[in-house]
Length: 78
Image 1 (cartoon, helix red, strand yellow):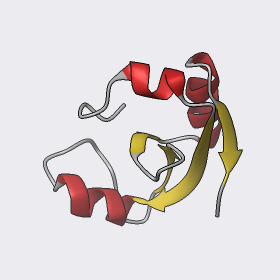
Image 2 (cartoon, rainbow, N blue to C red):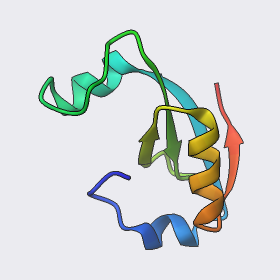
Image 3 (spheres, rainbow, N blue to C red):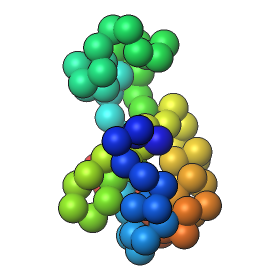
Image 4 (tube, helix red, strand yellow):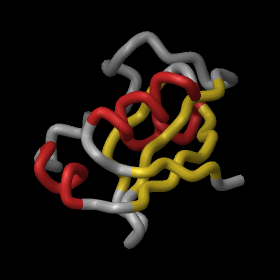
């Protein structure tokens, strides 16, 4: 989960959006010193209704599961 957001923010959200993002997009935001991500990797970001990114996962299933564990209803977005 993004450290700038609290878990309570996602817990109060009713609907969250899961969308694929490229490793390159994430690397542009966090820099090369972050986790082991390749530019060509496909990752899955969880966003609040206002577009705020809450978390990024390596698997779509994990993104949906985490959203549900926090009481949110995940929806796919392309």
